[in-house]
Amino acid sequence: MKQLMIFATLMATAGSAMAMSEGEYVAKAADCAACHTSSTGANLAGGVRFATPLGEIYSTNITPDVKSGIGGYSFEEFDKAMRQGIAKDGHPLYPAMPYTSYVKMSGKDMHALYDYLMKEVQPQPVANRENDISWPMSVRWPLHVWNSIFLEEGEYTTQADKSAEWNRGAYLVQGAGHCGACHTPRGWAQQEKAVDDQSTAFLSGGELDGWSAPSLRGLRVSQPELVTLLKTGRNAHDAVSGPMGEVITNSTQFMTDADLNSMAVYLLSLKAEPQDKPAKIAVATQAGQQTFMRYCSTCHGVNGGGKDYTIPALAGNLTVNAENPQTLLRVILNGGQTPVTAAHMSDTMPAYGWTLTDEQAAELTNTLRASWGNHAAIVTPEDVAKARKAGKSQDSR
Image (cartoon, rainbow, N blue to C red; front, side):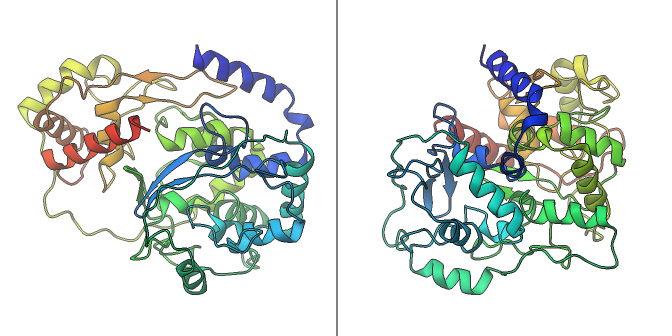
């Protein structure tokens, strides 16, 4: 029923996509809804919970309600919050808000976003929820120091030696799309290790809230296939689930084909650094093969080929072969759903955590990572236990 309601809403939205204002389009590209709209709350009224090393952070109300939202913000105050992470009253925001990416957005897009939030969004008198962070970690003045070290100010600068399409893609990926927030590894202070393609750490893969985001460098996919994946959450051989599915449902499916093509051009230009060979390579086992044949082969096929546009192939699969196996394990244990979009209802993979022990799940995972040309690092029962714990923690929120 929930999927049907989401699908109906998306169909209505798609039908009026041509009437979308410039500011609403920027809000979609920046994926504001993903962080500021809870599953049970009003649009952009906040309350989404985020697990961080400091504690639990709750997103704020960004509707134009004067008391609880941002209705009292001038454009200058809004722009300062978006680009510098400083609220109207002067307190620094936690960098869970990706202002380190939004700083690259153009003044034109920032004005359009401000006008949309102030004039088109319905005010919601929903009080902001207090963060669950214990003292002294709740003290915010060190964030000013954090900003002075890690915030690189300045709008995106066009690279003259690149095409207009490449530059548009770079602007969207680095700025409003804030792809690095998930796909770039973080350093000792939870800062993204790179904010643009000047460093090979940028978009080289990251881990956030118990999920692993794969490297977007050296992608082995065609431009049309990547555009289709960003638009619908699936293509002939791949499918998306987990947090990236929410990005597609709330954001990229609404973007123009021109912008999605620009993003694809930029992403496909990023070269991967040679990776060290894992110390221990996964090996297929008889026990793992038996588990695969029992639970997986009916849908994914005995040769791991999947079904075009419906069930992803396991052979050559980015998630299956990822250096960090967390997302693969989460899907095996907890199941997965492809995004709900105006083009497709969601397809669901059942969860197997209820029947597989950590040892059995590890055997299965290693078999997937060692079959059909796959070649990835070994997964241990301890890795499975970590993924199982992360899934239970998320379910309890």
